[in-house]
Each structure stands twice: as structure tokens, then as C-alpha cells.
Image (cartoon, rainbow, N blue to C red):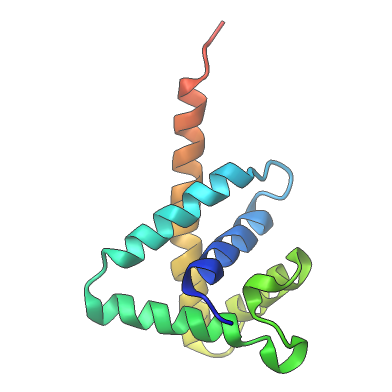
Length: 122
């Protein structure tokens, strides 16, 4: 079954694994996913509804070939689907990934710097 929150978290996780494969931090990715979902929830209805629908379509996309939603795919398959949509000829695909990438990176690295400042120096 498709799920907006699970799909959004899996999209963010996949994007961040591509961006930061060596230093990937699961807690940072969770915080980034929470930030993305909070941002979507605070959008005006006419924008938020479109993002929600596009995300659900993205989550359902692999049903035809893998018989399961995006959020239940393995990491490599998720990263490949994100890359395919990021490079798609369809603008809506590229824009959805751009939306998630922009907010995920901001949420991930903002949280990372906050955590660094909390660590004692010395």
C-alpha cells in the first residue's frame, strides 16, 4: 500500500545517500525527512495537495515492475528510481525530485551543523 509519509522518508533517505554516501547519517536523514514533511504540511493546500499526489504516484510507480511500492524497495533500487526521475524527460518527475532534494539537503545539513555545535570542544 502506498503511503505519503513512508514514501517521503524513503525519497529523502535515497537522495541523501546519493549526496553523502560516506558520511551518511540515519538520524540526520530522519530529521531531514521530518523537515520535508513539515514543510509540505505547511504549504498552501493548492501546492501541498499536488506534492502529496505526486509523491503517492512516485511511491506507486514500481508496482508495475516490482510488485511493491517505492518505500519497500531496497536501497539500491530506491536510489536508481530517484536518479531515473531526476533525469527524466518529464518535467514533473524532475521537479518532484528537485523539491525533495532542495528541502532534504537543507534539513540534513542544518541538523548536522546543529549537532556539531552541541558537541563539547576540547
